Length: 210
Picture 1 (tube, rainbow, N blue to C red):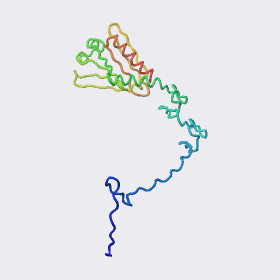
Picture 2: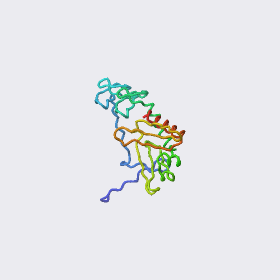
Picture 3: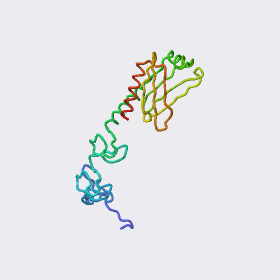
Picture 4: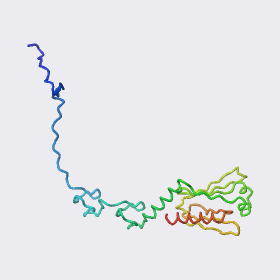
């Protein structure tokens, strides 16, 4: 016999498919160990299968949500957080309102004649102030130097303490009172009375759901 032994090729499988080589045969899968009891992620103690709350530390295991204000667990159907009294329903209303304002911001433009007589501003006659409410902020836009300079005052709606409608003889006004050291109060004059009152109601609604 030669120095290298020769063996006949392996028998083909069904339909002429070559039989698998020894190194291609997958080993039998190892038996899996049965899963142990569930573990509480907070205290790492064993809990009963299907338990809603850990009986060792009180941590909720199912049917809960996290309060965005205090980060504590509350029941998934809770309307108000029992730890910090955060109102989930009001927050949902606020988010819906903010989404609507993001899609279609509310804009209030002062009447040029009203600005001229209310603020004695020639610039305001050609470039009346504008107030935009969109998303989570309010922007008051003013011009000076006959439109050569523009000043934008921005404030978060969460920094607005109140929105007051100012009623005048002919024109209306709007005052946004702030808190938390945000900035000085924002005031607009020379507004159409109906538009000013409507904007004040919108802002009060945003504040009340905040």
